[in-house]
Length: 178
Picture 1 (cartoon, rainbow, N blue to C red):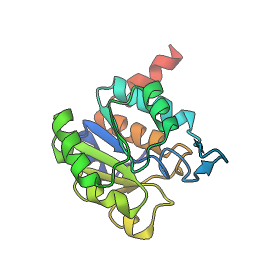
Picture 2: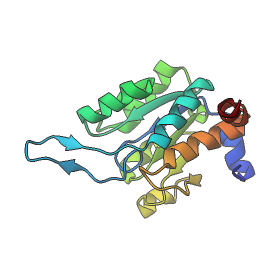
Picture 3: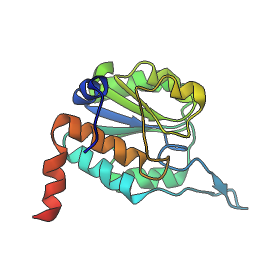
């Protein structure tokens, strides 16, 4: 179990929607481009299963990303992510649209990002989170910085944190040892 500060605990208890960036959060930030222009990305299975458990606990999930890679769309479908915004250059506007569609207030949203383009959402949401490799200016605006690295379980750590704060993690994990 994670030991959470009272501030992070209180913020995480209210989360109804987890929003994620992709490159540098769900991936390690490297973009591999084949000679034919196809992008190749690597996703971690821990993150994927954490997202499924979080969804089962009643928290919605979303992606807002500036890129439009087919591999991300495939991963979104595999994981059943509720809301997918791709090719977004104005994350602030996408965030407002997303909140309206999801029916949540700003304090009920968590966002995990890694760069300054994520700040328009991070500075407005209830639980702003960054990965340890994030840009220094972005790190300054995070209420929580994951111990796990981008593309290596950082999103799972956040899913577990939210579920722990909401009292749903133990029951979800114990299902696997029955």
